[in-house]
Image (tube, rainbow, N blue to C red):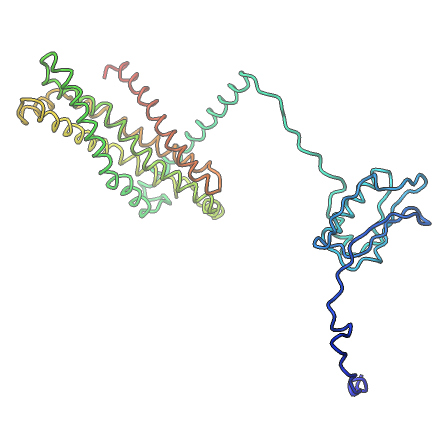
Length: 398
């Protein structure tokens, strides 16, 4: 090797020499099937790359008739380079050969190509069949019933786990973080005072105005105090406060949990063995269940005050007389009934929102869908529960 390095180098070629010319373009891929001594042989040549046009179709019609042959061999001596397009072409050749009863011999292929070809399935996958049969009314009804029963069972189990977690929290054995509970209590309680107060004040004012217009015809304006007080304490304040919290807090719960699901935070907690019901759901459900009755009492007082403001501007009665008439006309059991309803409304909103968040998808669009669904389910459920409470109160004589 030393004498070679000591030899005088040759003069550099001129600029027009072949060494200075641009490299020749890659040869276009080509193939042909020819008869050989052992049967048909596939000859491939050129650069089989995607950019060089290496994606070529091959079917059974491209196979020449060979009645006495049993296999198809491959000659790759003319290939300069190849990529995955060459493997795709070979797979189609293999399928076409199998269609005419020929075995595909891979011995002539490069070793990497044989390995890649072995990873492909022996035949194309059958297309998925779509069931075009339409369900009849009974089948649809049965599916809806089963789905409803399944969801009812899941929500009931979730409520039982939350109740068990609350009992453990009273004994200091819960995995719920106190910081999370305080944060949720603040968001579900003091942060909602403004919107709850404004809505209930306007509702009380509207009730008083409509009541005064109608009761004035019968010279019974004083009974507007009973109308506003009983309506707010028994029905209106509990329902309106629950609807506000369903749109404000229930949607936020569903969006937060679905976002955690999309970020795989829920999966991480499950991997570490941390129960979701005690770590994430319990603070949310407890905070809304505890704050709803208090918000109801606050909304009821604000609603009665709204009726008082309107009545003072339209009635000839003293403020003390108005409040005395309200106290005498609204019994304590009306507040107790609304207080109980508010607790169940809050628990239902929280459970429904958490369940919707847990069953949401993992994309960004699913977060909005989960929030919207939680609000709709919460509002519809509140109205349905209020109807059930009305029937129960009528049966119990409350």
